[in-house]
Length: 406
Ligand SMILES: Cc1ncc(COP(=O)(O)O)c(C=O)c1O
Image 1 (cartoon, rainbow, N blue to C red):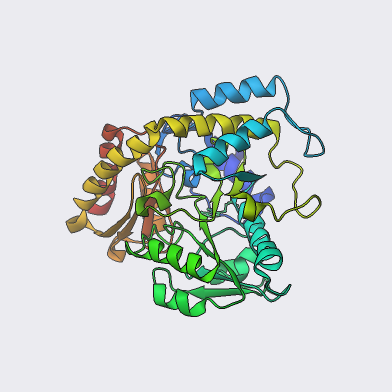
Image 2 (image 1 turned 90 degrees about the horizontal axis):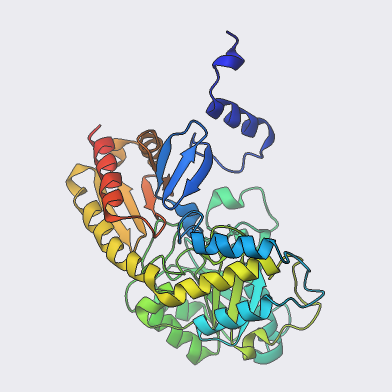
């Protein structure tokens, strides 16, 4: 038998990826072939409980039937016209999403990073046109440990050296302060500050929840100093934490919501900047755009996602099952879990390094049929699709306990 014949489908798929896919990710050795609900099946027919949900893009479950029905219907009618023309899907989507956010207008884009980039441009333009900050002299305050995407401007204000090294020159105009530190933020804001950009709960940093008085204080500071508050809810929002928006936990309404991931229902890339007319109204034809932004297929799917969120079922599931997940993870504190953070069905789990790296534990869990991913060093992230059941959570936690017990 030649080596080729003894290689598994998994081996062959990974080898092909290694040769032809740019190495900007380090995936676990699992090759997905199909998925439904909270479960993924690989090319060998092995089943895995998905506890990552594509970083919250699959909040409503893999191939959610309602979303797939919308996608099928829209595929049969109209998929793309570009923004050179109107479509009968974009207005209803933007009206529904604006309503969900309690805002006037939506700027539809595709990836999360594009929504962030768009918001930065809008904030600068708002600064120039409305606040009267001289062009090219504005600044935007961000938080240390942030993750907002990987474009050149966004990595310019990241403090993750892997994301930055070798990619300079960097975009100027950003100031970074510790997350959760209101005094540092107040100090950084000056007359040329146009916006404060924050994740309400920092995802990639390890599901870091700020002190309870932080976001209300940021809101107050932004209002008092005439600065836009921008909440990046791309990973935290849309039911993940048990509320429609993570900001809702603190009764805070930002000036701009940035949404993505789950907005596309796990089917298409769809992101958005949502704000009132006095903010988004600063954009005029030709100043910003995207060929696929707000395309009819994405808009139809986004409209269904908003309808699903309006019903509140997934927010309730995330609250109830999230309490269960956090309780079960808490029981592992004497078995290798050092700390558990998060809200709703979202948990950052710090593992005692004596049990190995987060990556090593993720691989061991994958071998047992549970898919999670490490974030920083010894931290694992649990973010399953919100269709997961309590029994499935118990089973996944049992697997983690067994891995930690060695
Ligand atoms: C908070 C946050 N903002 C922005 C992004 C970037 O989104 P995308 O990967 O779709 O560009 C991410 C991705 O993980 C994120 O977590």
